Image (cartoon, rainbow, N blue to C red):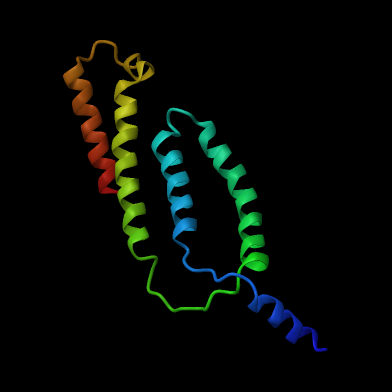
Length: 132
């Protein structure tokens, strides 16, 4: 008759929450879209925030009502996902510099510059950003 015991029994019948792999993958894909393409489509960041607001609630419902509570584990970091996100950040610097290099609006800044000069400017910019 104790409500805590009834709650524990109800939760014990739920599915196990196996692995956060799918949750990390979903974040990684969205992060990639925003960082790689937001210079071309600036609304990507807005749509990502809107998606995150919905995702927070749906993940909370999933973890609270659909799965058993995951066992707490002490971990040093997010493992391979940390390196994947760092690699994606590096790739996004390169692609965004490439988009700037190809942008007609940037070419209008210095119309007399040759393609080789533009390439040197953006390779320099890319190296500076990667050094940060």
